[in-house]
Amino acid sequence: ASTMKNVLIIGHTPHHIVQRLKDSNIGVQKLADLASPLDWLKEHGSSVDYVMTNGNEGLPETYMLLLPNLKVISCNGVGYDAINVERAISQNVIVTHTPNVVNAETSTTAILLMLACYRNFRSCENHARSGAWKLKKHELTRTADGRKVGILGMGRIGRAIAKKLLAFDATISYHSRHKKEDLSYRYFDDLLEMAHHVECLICIVPGGDRTKHLVNDEVLNALGPEGVLINVGRGSVVDEEALVSSLQEKRLGWAGLDVFANEPSIPGALTVLDNVVLVPHVGTATVETRASMTSLTVENILAYHKDKTVLTAVPECVDLVCKPTL
Image 1 (cartoon, helix red, strand yellow):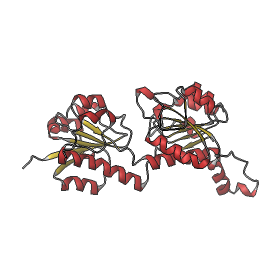
Image 2 (cartoon, rainbow, N blue to C red):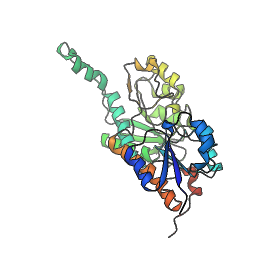
Image 3 (tube, rainbow, N blue to C red):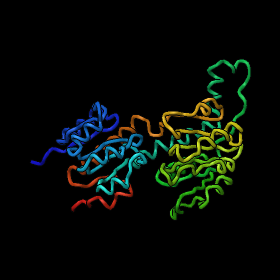
């Protein structure tokens, strides 16, 4: 009989998922149940084979160092910048995430924010609710149709956004590290040049040092007083201070934001502005999509537990994964 394998769970996990792990003879320890996680890890860290976490909490490096027998970090979320992947690889640990199952929901969130900005949804709704309509009609808003839209990051979600934008007769261009040969959309190798060219910029790049403050004051000024910025990627991609002042001074027209620099804190200067639509990082937050994500998170662990393979390793870890034997 094989010795019992154990998983450390970080963050909320539904009961039925915990049960699936237990049914596969995997012991479960929830971080939330530990009075002092570090003390527990110092004593029991060597018994942990798997970590199940999420994109926001990740796995602190102090914890990783106390897990000498760790095999897999399974992250519930497509973004994994809260996990030090290089450190994981150096410990021969595979990191997995939940791509593809988030494409539809996150792209819908981007469109939702774009429509809410152009059609000034918050103000219209308030006008109807407050009774102001009895006194006067709501002022005219702007069309969301036929816009020139630039997508920053043309990965899986970027492609899903582009596909949905076609229904609004958008002219699409994109900036990413490399031109995608299978796409006919216009490619810009310079973000600033694209910002000058488009009316709406949608950010869907991952977080991390490489993308920090890609959208800076220059880019915001290039979008201009009629321009719209949508961010459904990571808060770190946009220079938040520059964004606040560009919106205050009307150098940028509108912003629709699902992500922020220091979540769950949103600068008070943003919350009081009328030309901003704010949602609390809910890009994937539907019952249906979260269920698919959670399921994939546990399936990655169960696949490794069964035959040392995983379903969706992060790109950096693909070489660590055993190929299934046929």
